[in-house]
Length: 172
Ligand SMILES: Cc1cc2nc3c(=O)[nH]c(=O)nc-3n(C[C@H](O)[C@H](O)[C@H](O)COP(=O)(O)O)c2cc1C
Image (tube, rainbow, N blue to C red; front, side):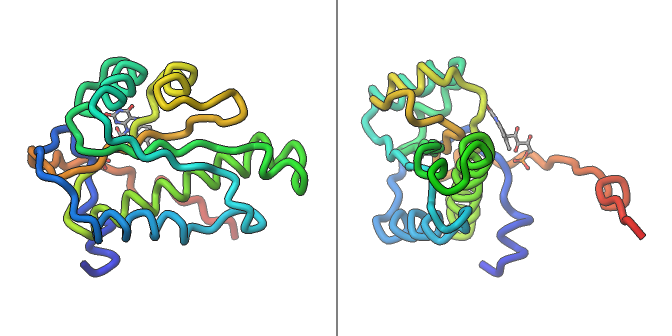
């Protein structure tokens, strides 16, 4: 799919079919995430791939019972890793760069999924510690986004956006 078509055809999907994701598509999604820029190229984040049904269920519980997470064949959990950024960037690395690194990687993965004909939804509403418990990580990592991915089992809802003129403030 052409880049701008990918951007425009990405919509949040909250119902997934049981159809598995082809291995080469999966690899391409992870590869896209790994190509995301990061502060100082430190890649101060970790990605957890969750496939086991019980763990997907636990993630759904951690995300305030958003059941569609458990329906997807797989979910990626993007976690900031502050201590990878701290030695070079100090407080800014801890409070900002590692979060941005994880966020950009997730955005790349999401767009890659769309480009490959797959569906996803960015999930940010969750209890951090419950997510940590579900995937077995400690306080050194900060869950930033959960991204269930699969084939869509619903038609996407068209969502509105602010106008460019309202959004963009031109400073002359
Ligand atoms: C930071 C962030 C957090 C979000 N959290 C959730 C969430 O917890 N559950 C959910 O269903 N959608 C969540 N979304 C998806 C948004 O609701 C969705 O992107 C928005 O309504 C625009 O719709 P679209 O993605 O179809 O363009 C989140 C999106 C972002 C960027």
